[in-house]
Length: 123
Image (cartoon, rainbow, N blue to C red):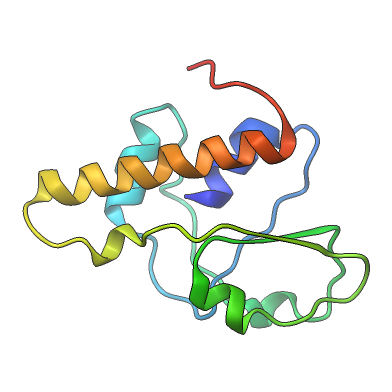
């Protein structure tokens, strides 16, 4: 979700890369809640940090505490930003309850990104 939001909202001024501590699958709930706000990510794929180890970054954002603890040191100036969000995958219950957790995380991520990089939600 983070990559989709950043590309949509800031892709004209940021070069966005996204990875997790390990590659998994892109959750259908993430695809659904971003589609609700006009951001298509159905073609996205999950990537591991290993794909980016030799690259240099200006900013590194981590969105869960486990990732912040295990995130490697990247080459270059990489300013690190961290905010721990509740992983919506951990929410059990009905489809509606899980979708609501993904919506909440989507909205919290978007708010944080806009605090970091400026802008307001317009859609």
